Length: 315
Image (cartoon, rainbow, N blue to C red):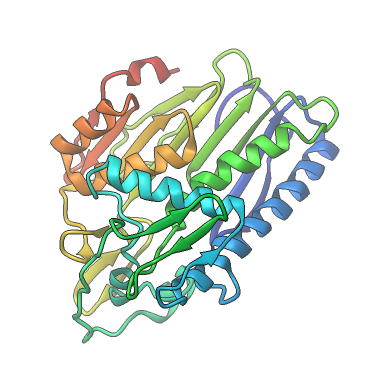
């Protein structure tokens, strides 16, 4: 993170990733207050949305065997967004990939996956059912998943959490604070004032070391990145990752290594980044641009493809 001088950020772990909180107008004491507030708010959401906590609303829903489950407003809204995103992306973003994700080896917290490895003999690739038969009753906030359908809300959940927690921090009334940025493992959401003169200046994720992704600057808005290179593991002589292609039930091989999207909200940027990654260069570019967002795509051989409108965010 680059830009005008700010109080040191607060950093901690939540939702299985690194969290960073920055603020405009905050001194060190105010930052500690904001950090504690953010940690508490994220714990509430993780307790509802984690697929690794047996008591979460998501686990309760996934194990309901086709029965409707009443959930909190935040969980209902997140699932409704996920279903809408499935429709809007033509199924490229699909939260019903959980069985395929677990079959590929991501069946526990990622730190444990990375330490333990996975069974190199497991080859099953379950079909991805899609969201067509998911039922939402907004009167009582009930969700019904068909038998055999389970949701993974990890990516969209991090984006939605960045959106939600940044709003809570700005509304918390901490003295002097006029703007905030919340970064959940690369899903960033900025609200309120931004540091002068260029705003929040962010170094774009560049795991291939291209040296060509550069910096982006935003005022209010969001940035999200999807990459096959950060959450990967090995099975025999194969390197697998967490971005499942709904068409095959296997980790995607789309010709892309990284997609970064700039949009108004972090949950939407996250969805578009993942969908574009699965779509490949040409269809991914069209998908992001048609949604009114922008960003860049990095191919497996290191070519950086900038999308229409990205120049507005170059510092």
